[in-house]
Length: 128
Image 1 (tube, rainbow, N blue to C red):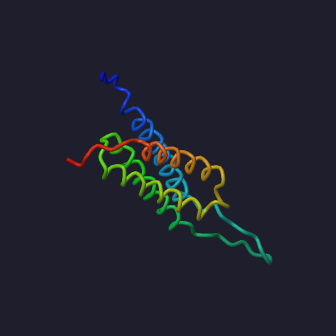
Image 2 (image 1 turned 90 degrees about the vertical axis):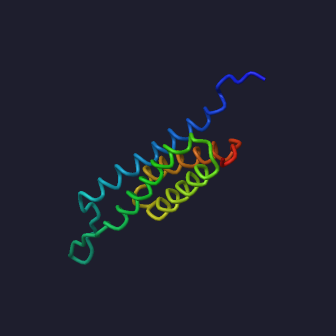
Image 3 (image 1 turned 135 degrees about the vertical axis):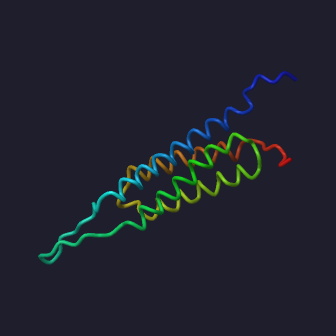
C-alpha cells in the first residue's frame, strides 16, 4: 500500500485549531489582567469586580492548550490524552464565564471541540 502522506493531516489541523484556541485564550487572559473591566452601579454606588483569578485561569488553560497543540502531531497516546485534558480545561473555564464573554466562549469552545473530534477519530500509534 502506498502512503500518500495524508495520515498526519488531521493531527496537524487539530494542532492548529488547539494552538489557535490556546493563543486566543492567552491573549484574552492577558487583556483581562491589564484592566478592571467589570463595574456595576447599584444603590448609588459603583462597584469594581476583581477578575484576576479568572484571568489567570484563562491564561493557564490557554498555555496548556497551546502546548498540547504543539505536541499533538507527535501521534502518541499521551499527546492525545494531553490534548483532551487541555480541551476539557478550556471548555470548563469558558463555561464558567459564558455570560461575560459569550463571543470569545463560542470561538474557543468551537475550536477546542473541533480539535478534540479530530484527535479522537485519528488512530494512535503505540507509545514506543
